[in-house]
Each structure stands twice: as C-alpha cells, then as structure tokens.
Image (cartoon, rainbow, N blue to C red; front, top):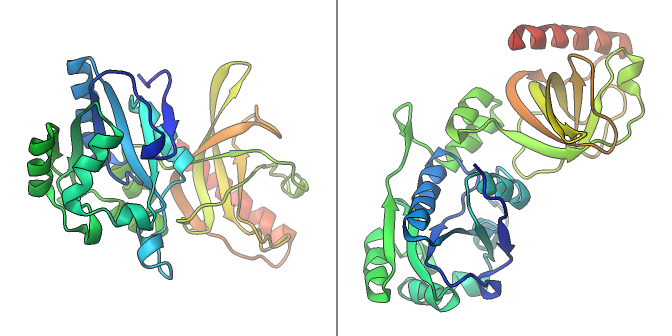
Length: 316
C-alpha cells in the first residue's frame, strides 16, 4: 500500500521531520527500477521496525549536467513521475537536493556529518553497493560505513539485483528504451514504463481517417523511438479508476502536419471513456513500428488499420 501522504522538500536545507528515527534511502533513483526498489524496501522496513519514518534523498539534475553539460545523461523520467513512483513504494518523505556546484564540492569525508547536521534524527542510510559520493566521487561503501560508525548512523549496503545474468541499472534500461525494447525495459523497471499527461483538443484529424485519438503532449529527456506502440490508458472518471487498451503513435505526425512538439496520440480499441482535460496514465507495452510519412491520408488510414489489427492481436 502506498503512503497516504508523501511530503516533498526541495533541498536538504528545507527539511523538517518529526522527532522520530529517520531511515534514508539515497541515490539518483532514475526509473525507480527493481534495484532501486530493493534499496528503498530496506529503508521502509527499518522505519517500521523502529517506529521511525522512511525517506528518500534524491538529486536533480543529474550530475552530468554539471560536469559535462555538452553530453548529459538523459533521464528516464521527470522528477514528478519519480515522486509518484516513490510514493507507491511507501516512502513518506522525499528530499530532492539540487545537484549544484556547492553540493558537488562537499568532500566525501564530510558528507555524513553534513547529512547529520541537516537531518539530526538520521538513524540509517541505505544505498546500493555501487554508490559513490563526495567530491570527485572518491567515497565508496567502506568509507561510508566508517563515517556512519563515527556519526552514529547505521549504513545498509544493498547488493545489486540481477536480471538475465546482468545487474539491473538505469543505464541498461535507457539502452532498451531507446531501442524500443519495451518488454526488456519493463522487466528491469518492475513496472510498465508510463507517461502521464492531460488530453488536449486536437484538429480531429484522427476522426477524419476513422480512428479518433486522445492527444497528449509530452516532453521528456530520454525519448523512446518515434513510432507506434501497444498501450494501456488509465484515468479516473466519477471517482472510479478505468483502464482501456489502445494503440498509440508517438511522434511529430509527418503525414498530416509535422509538429514541432512530440505528441502521443492514443486510439482506444473500445468505447473511449476519456476526453479533453482528463489526466491519463499511458503504459507502454510493445513497440510495433517506427513512425513514417505516407503519401496521402488514404495510405495513412490503411496503415493505421493494420496497426489496430496488430494491437488487437497483441492484446488477445
């Protein structure tokens, strides 16, 4: 069960916790994948065992934005979506520390003391076994354990989680996502990759070719391939959560009117309960084909018909 209320702070300097032991999972947590979940679960368990509270310390932007801005790592998800997933894993507090020059300059030997000054009730730190920290990333797990002992903070080092013989990592998931390998990405995430957006009014071009769509503008750093996907759409209507199967095109619509912005156009394979203004979660299950430009609307209509047939086969 997700935490009923998750409180978010914009930095370590803004925090304020109840007078209970704090058990803190620390990391970038981009994707909140199965490896991240293993770390988070130990913080949640420690909080329950001590009648304390569990939190996550995460960072934005990625350190690469500071150290190599010409070639930064593209994030799998936005801070908002990451926070939503963290809440689903029973995290009570989220601290999103800006990764700026001042924070990056903290010496590894000083990090635990810094955290303890900001978080006086810090009882335990939970990290993955490959976590590095401090200026020039010289801090490792043995150093963290030693610093924790000196500061009276227990350090929980969680071994990496493996899938198909290789450790799960955000880097590995990025590789699968950019290749359109949704099934593999979803297996590592432990959650079907999803986007969230609010339906906007379109020009009814989908209806004109016989396949009305829900149009959801969506901007993100890491982009799956532009193309057609089998998706599931979830939204709330009259207090009830409803999910429907669909097929979606993610791209710039080159045949009808090339867009400067990426748009996710979802055609629902049954009666569509959603409309303009609805906030929807779209889960991406399977990549069907790349986006392409057709000679005319008739050719586009015929291809969409084939896509719908393929999507129905997938869902059957």
